[in-house]
Image (tube, rainbow, N blue to C red; front, side, top):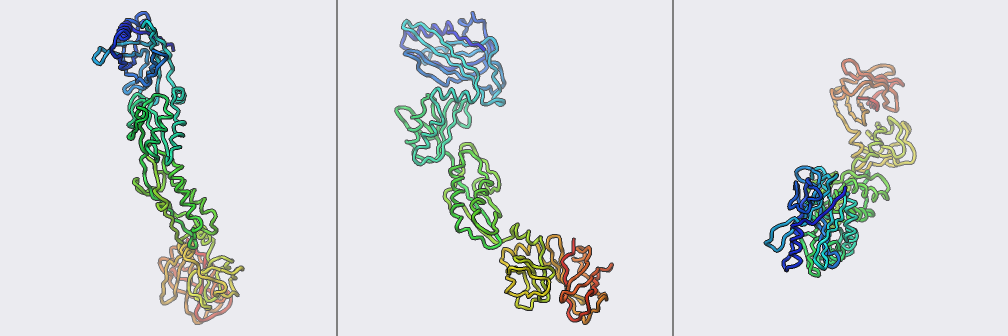
Length: 528
């Protein structure tokens, strides 16, 4: 790619008239096209051969005592792509003068492919032309062509020109009260997000207007204009910037535990960390992620012993209520007005630990002290018909040893009523299915995961070993759960055999001796 440039004959005449007169020379525009002429005919050109678009004049700086350096920037085309072979610089003498092609720059070889804006919106191609006049008013053209550049190369060029966004941001962040800064340079030749072509837009949260404008002025040595909704005059120059649009939110965290969770010692730190993340770590235009708040809460709960976990987290605000990722626009930022907008609540409910313990099995203690299975230390049991002052309900073995299937004493020394949280957890997995009393028997059904547990009560004058007795018709709702019954344990830890007949009657046979009176039976392995 080799670009050459000339001052046209018409441009030479215009510049000579300007140098010898008093009228103002206006450089009005730059145009770009896909055609070209023979090099020998460039000076006689008065227009481009095939004009396609306008080029932005993004820099106008003094060179030496007389010259001007002009940076011409070609951006993507809104309609269709093309190959740029020609760029023209236009001007006129006086406000009412005739617009004239002053300079023509060509590459009659490869040219520069210019894409459609929808395909490559960040594309730019810069051409720098320097106009220099001698003491005799003669004109020479020194063309410094560039290639079409990547965003990184353009940022390096901008730094060379005096625009360094990192330096500017550091200066603004040093202003008292400033919390966030976002700097955008519209490198295209069209307005983007309301920012005019070739202008710098600075978004600031916090800080005094005058101090912010001073910081921008001190660090913007590029000559590029600033754009924004607020401005101040500094040394005759208008410096502008905009405020970040703040999006207030409310955070609610619901915790649960087996016992009423006590988060007094960690609540302040948890709220502080959430406040810091949303107000300071989260940048302008960044999405707010509930998962990050969940991580902060879990980190804060790490010092609490016992079973406690997050039940729910949601964030409310202008966006509604969300439990996921909340996006926002480039010029907006989520914020908490105070730590009071962070709500931590606790409740006693089923936790994964409690449910796991229930899934491991729950003993049923009936007729005083007999038990379907041993209750380990810290384990749970459902106690019925207790003769030691314990009302029917859920209990925990608070002793340091296992409670045996027989021979133990189920009293308040061994068992304590479970907390509300554990009760909720156990009841959610071990609930009464149905209680039916008929002329034959009373049947109470429980469920524990996929295990159905039945408790039978019947008054029988006497039962003889190895003799089957009809306990009666099973309730309809319980029949569908039963696959087999097998052995049943009952009064004084006696073992019984039980079967369900084809007509859905329960038959029970004592296997270990005779007995009489009220017969209480229980079984803990009826599968669905």
